[in-house]
Image 1: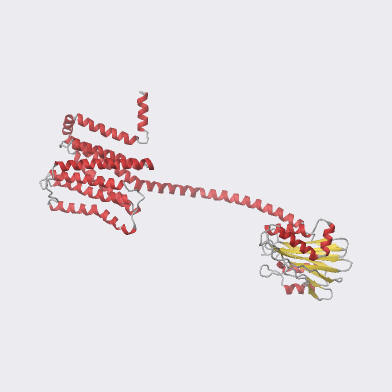
Image 2 (image 1 turned 60 degrees about the vertical axis):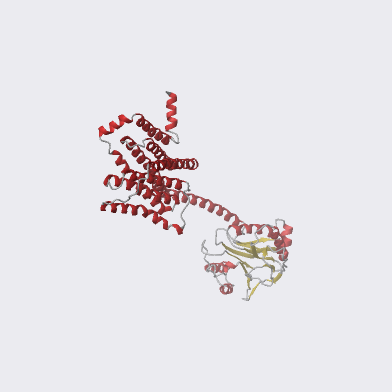
Length: 551
């Protein structure tokens, strides 16, 4: 018993379980009818079910009509050649079967019964041909645009035949007057139908082994029942009510399985896919707000961490700047520094070279932000040497300092588009001599003397610090100017006077302010210049840097 139960479970719940069970059931019913033919005939007659086969015949025709409708709809949606063939052949088959059914039951006497049986056999043969031809074509094969007119012909074929039959019935005249073809032709058609159905089953079995589609398995089930129906037809070739009942029932069930398979593949499966997609969309929409909130929180946290890191970098960069007010033996400096972002591409420094000399520079790296700020760190290390002798030697010779810096810059693997402009100067406190050199600066320092005369420190025409050493070796020169007590010089980057990028002071206004405030305190002068500037973060497009030197 345990072996039988295990065998039962393996068969019923296996991949081909439904096909095996259905085949066993219909075959068993056929064998029972074959063995107990006489008792079952009496049972049918006594229960009044002798007309039930005609109900199954009519139901079979209706199922075939549904198959034509399903295939026609599939053709309009995806232009599958297989569905075109199914619709065409099943339409013809339904017409032939309807002719036989209608003429026998409504107008007997117009055409002989044997002739109408031939129509029934031909109708089944046409359907079997359609199954073989359609099954041999892959579902992916589509009609070309030039052949889509066939769709209308296929769809209208059945309805035209149906209309002609109904019209003929209403006029009460026979539709066909074919001569008797004989029993041999009828048997040949039945055998040929059985062979075609077996070929169809084999084709679908191969397709299922490759695709594992449940609808192909359902289709195979229907074809298997139709094969058994043909076996019943050929076994009970003589007419009996029992044969008629079993055969018509099997035909109905077989075509119904085929209808279920085509309906599932062409309508049910796409609808299920659409429903699943709608559920996924609905689920996603319901969770979208949660997902957005979570992602927004993550972005805010990441942004806060990034801002904190940039703030740390900002504090490091600005810690390298000199104090805003410096005094070297009555040489006074005041400075302002306004990055357009948290990190700046501008930088400056004022430092002692020795007891008698002061070094100073201002530079502007291309761009601004993180990359430009990193470049200013490099500049601070190479312009202002940590060794006092080297720092003094280069500081007292600005052109040598710029030349050395240019050479070191070209040794680095900086991007080719990175460059900077700068202005370097040294001042001797005893001699009051200012020596300076330009590294491609585009805004020369403005010297406003105590007596009101002005001049720009533009005698030195240097070259920007950039990656050009493979093609060009620049020459840097130093120039000098003698200063007097009360003279003032403003060193600045172009952001101070760039009205296109910043809402700042103009070059002419800067000259006027330096002139009008030459007798006032350095603090008053600086406050006046600041009054022209927007100093809040994010209000300018370029960095603003300057410092003022007063003798």
